[in-house]
Length: 72
Image 1 (cartoon, rainbow, N blue to C red):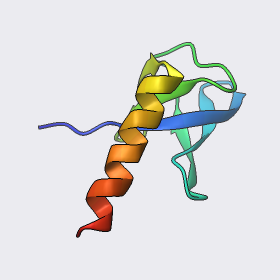
Image 2 (spheres, rainbow, N blue to C red; image 1 turned 180 degrees about the vertical axis):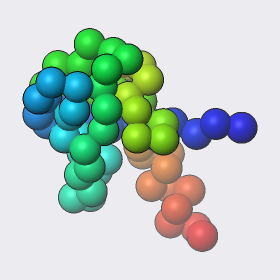
Image 3 (cartoon, rainbow, N blue to C red; image 1 turned 180 degrees about the horizontal axis):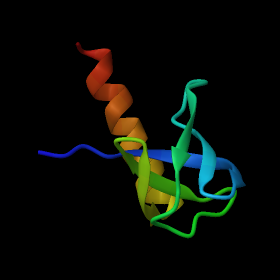
Image 4 (tube, helix red, strand yellow; image 1 turned 60 degrees about the vertical axis):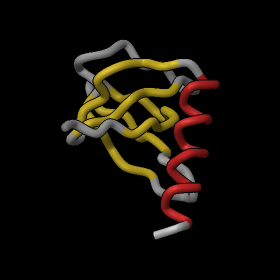
């Protein structure tokens, strides 16, 4: 099974973007597979953005992750 986490694109420089996974967790990811723009959300798997997704879907997924992690 593969796992991809939504993140908001903060900055794009060439094939690398700084993305925010929420709660202050920001990382650099490779965006060579998608056309990501600042302010959009992407699904990140193994350091690569693999798909651009809409804000509503990203926020709902992040909300569900927060809920799941709260009970661990």
